[in-house]
Length: 110
Ligand code: TYC
Image 1 (cartoon, rainbow, N blue to C red):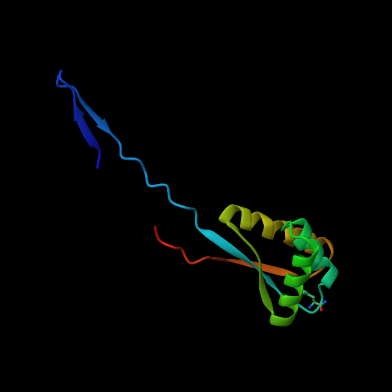
Image 2 (cartoon, protein in one colour):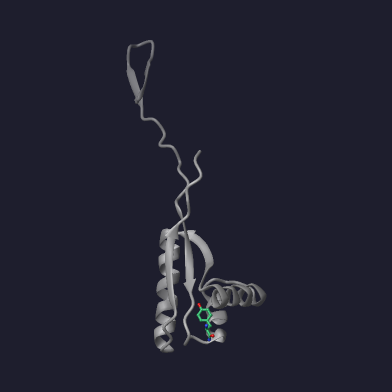
């Protein structure tokens, strides 16, 4: 609802309410295991596209290798989509079937 102000001359000014600044929804980028993509390639992707250090990249790669799935990172929708596209492109170039998906994080209210 607009707020209305009236000055002494009777002029009415309506002020649009500020839109609540909502935090953007965040998405987990999930890395899926397969039998053909090399461990080195997965670590390379995690370091170059997801900017992880070598130790974290190895840890996440091994987690996915052993559990079938793991989180490569959490991003806004556009950033998550772009990273997935970059990895898909790189994987295709190397003829690896590496697969990534994304899912929304549950939104905290307030
Ligand atoms: N399982 C693969 C192998 O043994 C390694 C791998 C890890 C592949 C993680 C994909 O997301 C992945 N070479």
